[in-house]
Length: 179
Image (cartoon, rainbow, N blue to C red; front, side, top):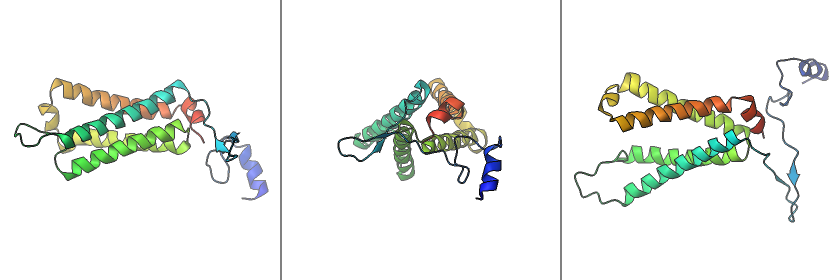
């Protein structure tokens, strides 16, 4: 990009002062920790409480689903009364992927990365759209067959996902997650 064009863009309100005008990517942090090995590991900035709560939620949800998968794999399937949402290969694979994604997103958010914020917002938005589509158009009878506990859990899941997506769009979270 030419110097004249760059100088015009720098004063523009459309260009963020925290982004490189050539790539529109967040600027790299210059904070380095030169430990005993001299490797220069980048330090994560102090994260706001809300970002820590998001990371904790993602980690706890991933671990909870992981424990559910392990318990299901170890249970005795000889009983006819045993039922599980993990029956079959696809639900097992999808839930295993969900465990991996939540733990990965928690790590990216704790590292304070821009990609952690973007991927968390994208994946939780896709989850919101999928669940709403499933309940509204694909299988609306699922809502009728759910008990009160299932309905409350589903509504809480949607509310938590939406809250996380909206919180990660706030200026506080954007400043904290820009590495």
